[in-house]
Length: 146
Image (cartoon, rainbow, N blue to C red):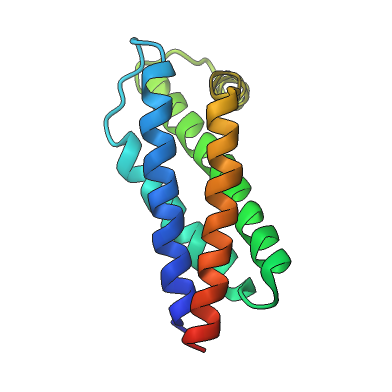
């Protein structure tokens, strides 16, 4: 059922996904075609906010921060997985894999590469601070619009 907390959580994580995507783009190799990189990440953020953070909203400030950090980490993990699968699909359409096993291994390789690219202090701080702020705002929404 739609609630104000779910809507606010979806908006907060979509904004966080946009900010993170803009920070990550300059770090990616030039060979990667971005395509719908930012909109896909924002959609993942909105779905994560709606499905993970929104239902768990409530409690005190500690619960809000914990909820926000959980949502931000889930956003990053789903984002990395989705982008790795999309990159594997691009390669598979060019017939670069002989079988399903190679494609699965490629997803793990792409995901690992993306995590290493993202492993910078500014991105980590953005994830932590953005997640905490998103959780606090979502808790506030739950309190104001039950």
